[in-house]
View (cartoon, rainbow over the protein chains, first blue to last red):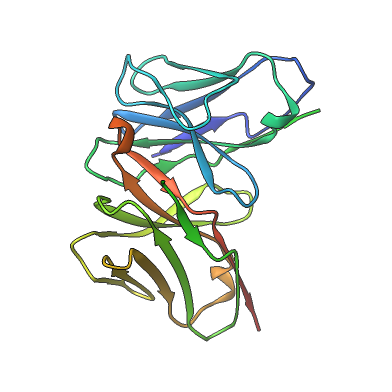
Length: 113
Length: 113
């Protein structure tokens, strides 16, 4: 059982390039999330998808777009990468609401030069 | 506001107990979580506590919750070198109309012989 799988694990981009980060979960979870992790700041929510077919902005959505392709997959796109988007990106999923714990992928380390 | 605060660093001797503290602000949080992050890895759920509990024990881990003071602590008994990691406190919040986790910045635990 793979849980939450993120690809790629590492990526280096030049400023202005675009890229899509992929996330898939095999736990039949309804809700999925994208976070970024920066030193000394914990995790900040970029976008979330409460259920298939819905997406909503989180705390830091500017410069990103998302697609909930189906129940399993939730992708994050950077249309024109900027150095400020250098970060570690985590995808997470949860079965439903009610405070159930989120399950995290291993992260994508993204550097933008 | 929505803040979860933790001290950034803790150093302990192998075999001693570690206590990591956290304060949160959302009094309506129903669950509070402790996650562990090892270098280069994602977040691993260690334990969580429901807000109507004062204490939860799971092997070497003890979680104490003081709801009046909005204070959460994680005690690791007989700390081992394998416990060296970053520990994140998180509260679940329904502010904004969706279930989300608010993370602290993380406490880096260093275990030395």
